[in-house]
Amino acid sequence: MSRTLKEKNKELVKEINSYRDEQSLMTAFAKENILCYVAVLFFPPLGIYRILMKKNSISTPAKTVWIMFALFIAYEQLKWILSLL
Image (cartoon, rainbow, N blue to C red; front, top):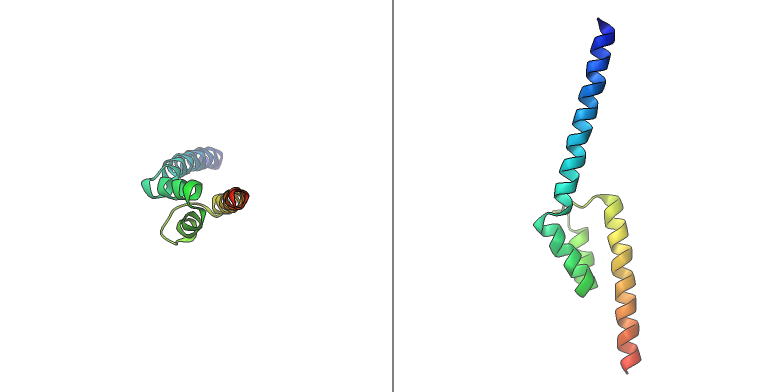
């Protein structure tokens, strides 16, 4: 009997983990997160601010990647502006 309970628990754990994956995918495309992504592309300082706000639901590893991406875009934009001068 305990063997069947262990098997049922494993199945429930798998089911719960699948719900978490679906939920994290849905939060990645939330309205506020999409605004953060657009801000990173067109105005990196505002994008970094929006990423670091406590309200958004972006995970910590994703925040790190987006901040590095924003810094790279800011560097390229600054390099482009300085080449025009």
